[in-house]
Image (tube, rainbow, N blue to C red; front, side, top):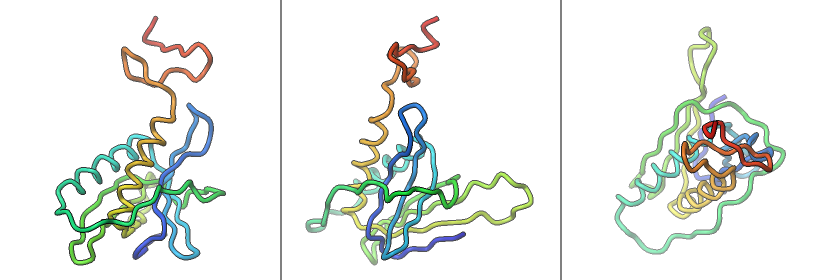
Length: 161
């Protein structure tokens, strides 16, 4: 199912599940429609970094309406899983266009679903902040290999063997 949402009311990321077993989501809401797309933690961080770099390259203009990105709208059910993502700046509307494409594992399916969301600069800044909060809320990394430590009380890492 394709989604092409003009200007969204909210654009956020979040997780469902306990640390070590979290499922990450990208969620956009416009009017009464909420789109939830499943993705990986690394994709959340990559998108946040890409958006931050994109904003750095833009000329400054006036103040931007900014509030914190909201939590996920519950219940969260993935419409599909994101394979590829990208973003660009639309100077005519002064907004960021975020694009996502479904990962297709079935060789019989020819066309992957796509989603396009238009978000303001303030929403983009809020998403970046929220992405960092969500990722940092996970298990701490091992000091030696940077992989997440086990979520048990011992905080054990296999590289210690």
